[in-house]
Image (cartoon, rainbow, N blue to C red; front, side, top):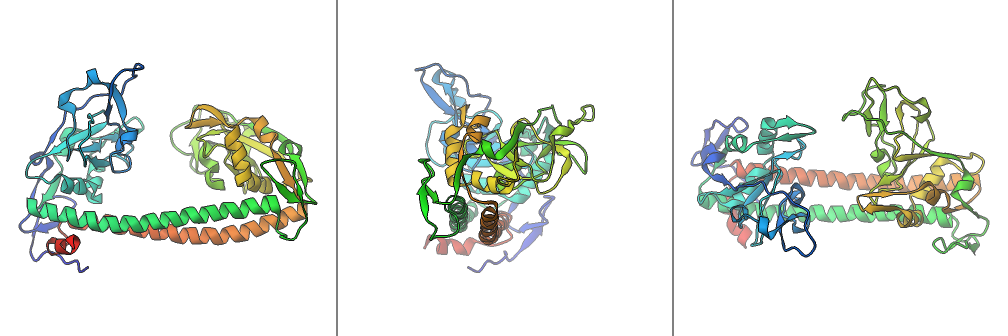
Length: 454
């Protein structure tokens, strides 16, 4: 597809846009939108009470309306003035700075009411709703919103007046429709490519899991005699391996502390307390920490040492029990109370080998089965569940061989994953650039809509 600029341009007053097609207008948003009254907050519902859905920030987090993420109010609370119509746009006006300005357009008739922490916009008759939604997704427009947002506690916000004052380029209505059709068609193709790449990453991660799981439960020798482990979820293991409980490999298990920290990471060697996410993905991330306030004295016994095996004690079902090993000393970082630190008997195993085992499918299955908690978003794993878990244990030299083989295979998988992720990044950049170019008139799509329709 040959993308060309418009034949004639003119200068404009929009700070982030030096020129627009000569027949386009330039105006503040107030000229083409109105706001729907908001203010409905999801409430506790009595059993048996008739309810209606109300929007929340989570409802539009993916860029499309997700009814499953809506809150609810009783039908008696539903104000007809706040009912949304097809073509209405909800835009996040209170959120983290990088998320403010997220938006979604209501595409089909549904009973939905305007909720809190969102600006609900109804385009004027001279404004095609889908085109306006694309304009809101323009990265330059998002930057403008972020520059106008007022900081709040851990958040930022933009008012109706702040949004109304933003200037945007406005093509004729027919051209708005053509731009929308073009972007709908072209971004759908890019999204399909991204979905393929994301599926490839899932397959690579599944393969990585299989490599680890097979090595730590079956070994590297396919011809090794096998025996029944006596543990139903482990099945057969090499005949010369022993079956032990993890507690018999450990010297100690402890968890850290939970002081009231600042909402920013420590810098340099300033004291910081690790967040539970420092072990997500199997790699220790020292940057995942919170700065310790100067009036609080560090507790040296909780500092991170090389070889520490750290396990998340509390997290979501998918992440509880995540494990990583510290590759060096971090004397200024301290483990939090949502992390376990396990010290291994060096004559029995190593922290790296046990970390691999705890990341296997078999161990993960037991961790998720043994986790408890009223909410899926916060599950806990007890010390006893971890320590009582069975583990097949080869000799130390065989453990080392298994670790080396896993490292080689997983490095290859990780390199492929990195290439796929880079491809996704480039597709996303292409998508963003295409949206920006189309809605600001840097490319002329008028002659391309016939191709799109075909």
